[in-house]
Length: 369
Image (cartoon, rainbow, N blue to C red; front, side, top):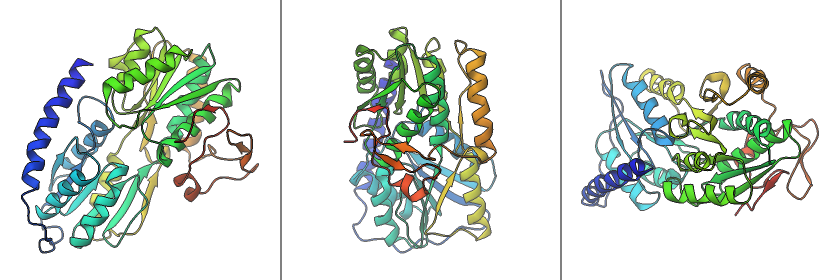
């Protein structure tokens, strides 16, 4: 934990210096930047948290490294960028710096991306997890809810108290959808179990995330899941002798005695495909990429040694269906917390419904605010 805090502090100082330089740029937009240069593509990444050793930005950075291996690609990134005005300055600085393609990797970067894109029509922007687009802005994400469902099955089969804690970042559709998928996975194998949610209203705050996990452990949770960037919740579970479910990357090293598995990202397939499109001149704006386990974008981490083979086999059987493209996570009947049917029997929720999800399924204890 101290290592994470030390890294975060150092990166915050570095970012502060970088942003100070960005503020010196003139307020008017610079002339539009030309498209890709022959022989080299300049690609920028904007991260909401420190890259560190694990977590959301670390996973994106593995994708960045993958496209560098393609050859003829030069990449750069800025980490620990706050959502809002700071993000806008960083994104604009990249556009002014001659980047051909810019990936903005947090939901809160959506409006800053759209604003900058208007002034730089020749730069291509890809925004992660959002829904707004334009001629030079498209969206991308992965169906991480599939991996959430599998980790939910694992938690449901491993819990003894039937109370599972979930440390969540912000009450936005992406996070709510993940909690719902996790809960559906839990209750598919253990209908008596409940998932208790605590909001931190932050993406990366190791101390706060750990405290939130402790509060859930205090009310009887014996498995802790998370939609957060740090391993703080994992560490809290291990210190109490309970189990944990990680997110973004394999967090087993931070809590080896607690870590059951994790919902993990592999951004390389998406990043490689987009770079290929830009090079071939087939890239277009005003669209959304949403790939799943069948494309290799989402997965679960290796199971911890405490997970019985019978549990692993059951979860892996469902995983194989996802890999074949069989996605029935949000097929009804599905009820909300009040017991009202939100998705009718036999009906599969459309993507637009999932992307705008603002309600919790039956079995979740907590508010969507």
